[in-house]
Image (cartoon, rainbow over all chains, first blue to last red; front, side, top):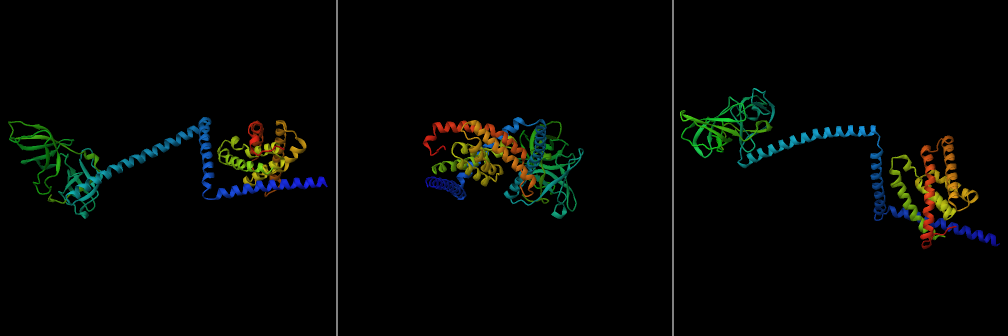
Length: 271
Length: 159
């Protein structure tokens, strides 16, 4: 019958189309799971996703409510405060690491023995003393020289407990360090503190020619502080011919407030 | 007739990727509810063939687990062949809105009556129903342009 024959043919054609369509879909789905073809599909999807995300962020910024913006601003401020705190802590850690590296370079260059210590407290305004975290348990003794960086004299140990010690800085008014001018072995004097940034070197013979910029080192006299530790440089010379001695203003090469790591040398350690 | 499947299968994959990776990313509800695959299925149902459009909607329902697409696959042929049988944009809009609206009513009824039926956001589906109008209209214009300028070079036969 022509009608039945036509219907049968039409049905066959529809069936063929459906099989082709779903078969190709299945093949495409299978291909998308194959490792060497899936990057292509994933690449297309990730590109679309990135584009949509960018557009969404633009829309969000344009149509964000005031309350939403205020919330975002508060969140950003909190994060900024937190990051600032972290940055400060990191900067402090960087400084300390630099100090440790400097001390390590100093001790390893000349095989210099010493006890590295950390400053844990500073004295009041009227006192230049500092407290470190090492004591007699670590072989620290009264009179030991304390240095920083590349062997610059920082202070002297004045009191020792089992686990901590007190250091008198060279800027302290009670500090008196036997010193010599660099290059002039016989020119000795006494460097005293003035509770300020500058030191005073006294009892310098009048016949000694001092110049601004001359380096001043420890002389080793007295027995507890080794010789050769750098103290500072001459910044001013006070010469009164009517006096038996001249004096000089010495500026230390360091800022005592900036150092948190120090090295305590053994008493009268030979250099 | 089978040659049209060679064109429709890559188009299906592309539109599915666009819908999933582009439209659904938007948190603004009126964009992510745009029924791209359903619009394409309705257009194919009118312009290419009812069988092809029905297969498209079934495939969309299967791959995206879309209940609306499944209902349209069942109801679409009825509206396109018996009610809105012309090839005008008004017939397309009428059949599309009727099929989608009926699907929406059925899904709402099923979600209330059948406890195991997965819950759907009816408000988003309703917004999708409204977005069907501009989507079908723009799609109709695009398909007309495609048929006139490029369609003769590809294996697309209109029924």
